[in-house]
Image 1 (cartoon, rainbow, N blue to C red):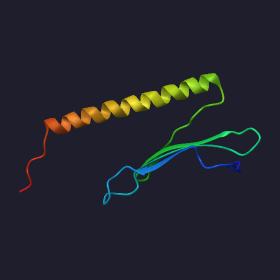
Image 2 (spheres, helix red, strand yellow; image 1 turned 90 degrees about the vertical axis):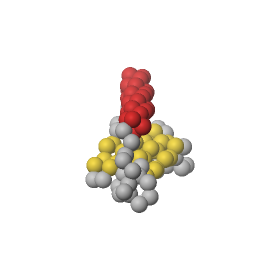
Image 3 (cartoon, rainbow, N blue to C red; image 1 turned 120 degrees about the horizontal axis):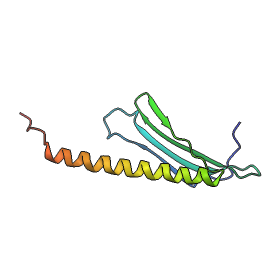
Image 4 (cartoon, rainbow, N blue to C red; image 1 turned 60 degrees about the horizontal axis):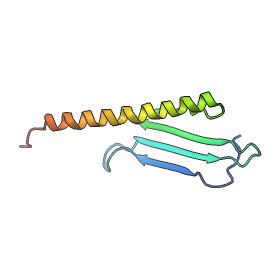
Length: 101
């Protein structure tokens, strides 16, 4: 059983990824909290869901090497999403949809 939390998460973001009216199964959940046990362990969730698929990312924080790897993992994800988004926006501009008839 997970240790209880002594206060609310210090980071909590749960957002639907789709606009209203689209499938509601796409989401992102990012949460950080500290447990109330003597070790004051970090409790985290980093989940990305789309329809029936959910990716749960591991965060290693107990060693210097683990923290270094976690920083790298998050930096790579941030950069990949940013580059992907910019490229897709450019493609949308270069390939407009035909007008509706």
